[in-house]
Length: 284
Ligand SMILES: [Zn+2]
Image 1 (cartoon, rainbow, N blue to C red):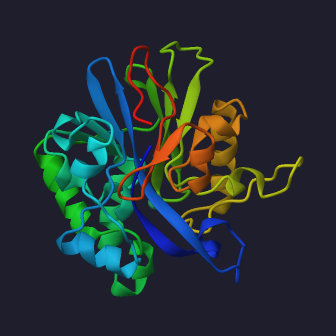
Image 2: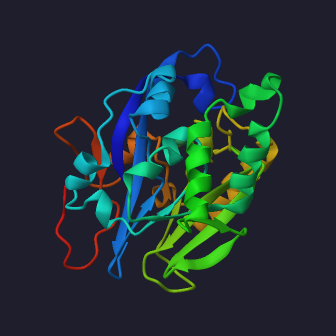
């Protein structure tokens, strides 16, 4: 898991539902690299500090951004080597980096793509719905679709790549958010599963509500869909992870660094090594 930027002062109320007047906290921005079987796959692709992406980053006070060139160099990889990107959803901090991976094919839920295009076509009064969605990214996504480099996924799919499954969580954080199951042993009945949540969860608090010994799901503060559906999606995520919080990979959670080997890069970002292939050198 590779941090590439952060927001120093994200409102806590946006991260955990109901935590109003609780101040601000750091929100790391991150994407995650999977390597194996000769392929390099990225989960989400960050944001591009250029043109329309820069406007969004200024609006949300995104700081300390570094390009994928520099971020991936920390783990001996380049943007050109990325074969595929699985997009959990279309918000600017997850899909804003489309232009930075010239050889990648992108994979998103069909419903996610379609929903944003429909919302863009509404009257200006509805623009809150586009709060975290860069319409410039959507235009580029459609261009990529035309070129065959943006592929739509139809709901739940097993083995989208060997050992990797996607699950849709409709009408939750966004219309067609998806989470990613990584079966690290490649077995269909795996006992070595990791779940990459995208923004269905922001914080560990979303899994336990901060209630020690008596966990309660508390959804993220920013749901464009149903909070109830988000809570049920959280339960499904927990089931897939065997209710082991360490198996739930939440890119916006700074405490991930204490759960797995990690280090701080020269740019001040976290780098977390969740699992190493046999014979693979550690980058921590
Ligand atoms: Zn996000």
